[in-house]
Image (cartoon, rainbow, N blue to C red; front, top):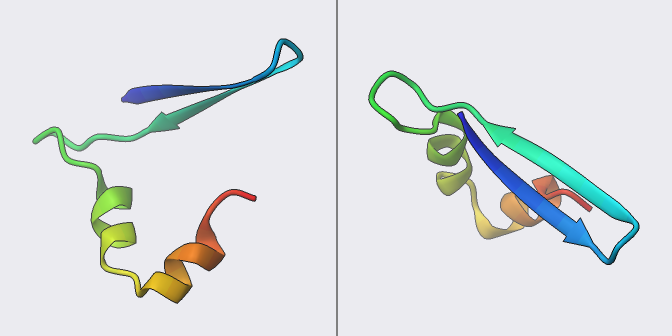
Length: 46
């Protein structure tokens, strides 16, 4: 599991965790990297 911390000023903090398989790879990253630029832009956090 990889944890990312996104800080928004002093008010908000968001923690995002990414699953890593037994080989240390991210299934989400593999899927996301295969998307077209348009699809990737539409699936980002907004």
